[in-house]
Image 1 (cartoon, rainbow, N blue to C red):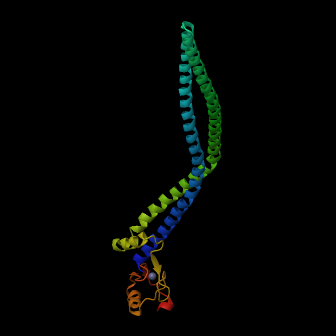
Image 2: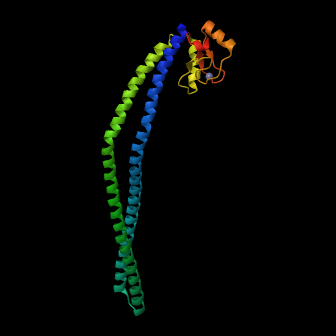
Image 3: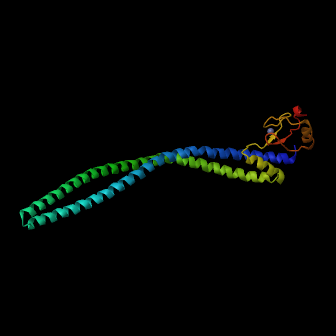
Length: 240
Ligand SMILES: [Zn+2]
């Protein structure tokens, strides 16, 4: 086995380790997503309730103003009642007063209903906030476990990447970039040993002439069928 092939296989072994670590990080993501989804559902409900409470509070303030305004009108009507001179004026003023009182009565009824609704909404909001606190407390352990796991993998990854960078220095540039391009297509193993007379990755038979060249020169060749780099293993009797 040539020195450059040996060096390349070391790089590949490093890359396989890095790939495994990256897969472990990917595997953590659903757990984080699940935790987030549960928390977000409650957080969104809180946002909706908060908005509903604010809207009702605005309606409440508006209604209170209206009631105050109409009560002033009643007072004014009462003052007018005292000042009337004729029976006709008295009847008109009494009718106005009666109408204003009815309006205020309806508005006060509305305000009572609104206050009850607001109490219910505030109650629901308090419950939701408690639920969020409970979820966050409950998730604390799970989240810190995931974070610790992630930190451990990150640590291993940086060590593995440093090792890979050192290993890569022993591989000639041309060969390394060829290898990197093949790996770039999401292939985990880019360099494979020939299996008998065929590519070790896709099992496509290699023409006799080409195999002779490979055995004679220890060349690393591209498989035309699947695109991996193939090498011949000396002593593999099936290939000779
Ligand atoms: Zn192949």
